[in-house]
Amino acid sequence: MYLPPQFAPKDAAIARELMRSHPFASLISVDDDGLPFVTQLPLHLEEEGEGLLLLGHVARPNPHGRYLRERSRARVSFLGPHAYMSPRVYPDLARVPTWNYLAVHATVEATLMEDFDDKDRLLKHLIHDHDPAYAEQWRALSEDYQHKMMQGITAFELRVIDLQCKVKLNQHRPESHGAMLKTYAQGSDDERALASWMVRLGLG
Image 1 (cartoon, one colour):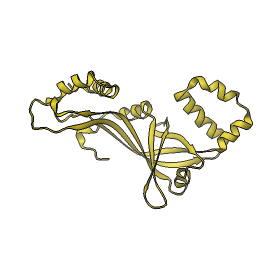
Image 2 (cartoon, rainbow, N blue to C red; image 1 turned 180 degrees about the vertical axis):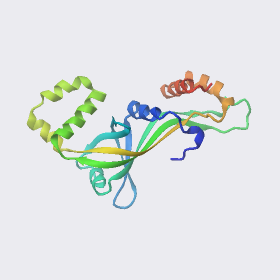
Image 3 (cartoon, rainbow, N blue to C red; image 1 turned 45 degrees about the horizontal axis):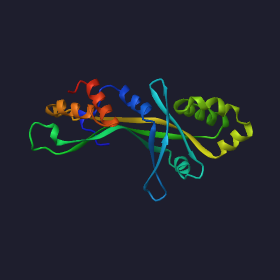
Image 4 (cartoon, rainbow, N blue to C red; image 1 turned 90 degrees about the vertical axis):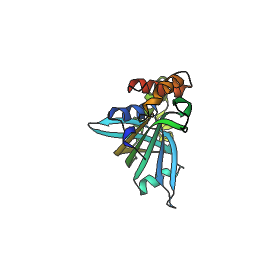
């Protein structure tokens, strides 16, 4: 991603926090024509020492599984809160609008999961992340049904080999921060989330 230094956070934990709080990501691979192929999907983040691992799956008919098998390197994009910023936040008029956002891009190396137990572990992680009350119902399903469901997915782990995080909150324009914080604090869910990040990072 284009990452000017003023938008690169010093705290590496911010990227992990965004990946967990906004887990519905875009997985991007190269298709047979050399074009980007994108699948939106939830991913579960695991930390292994200093390394990061993303777990996910797609429907078996989705060609993305084959692309990962044939070309294991891919990219994952996470988008956090984002919102328009009006030039009215500046004290002078000679300004232009922009868009503020938080995002993470991870370069990954994919390994496909074939074993039932590995797939089961993956699904239990996703259930725990998004619907823990369903865990008992999943465990109560017959073994035959569970195996049938597992055959319908292509599961994978994505080992993060490079990570970029961008926190774009107009850091380089401090004259905008007061009005921007006030505007965002009274706005939509995303705008209020950006206001919280501004406060957290000491902006405004």
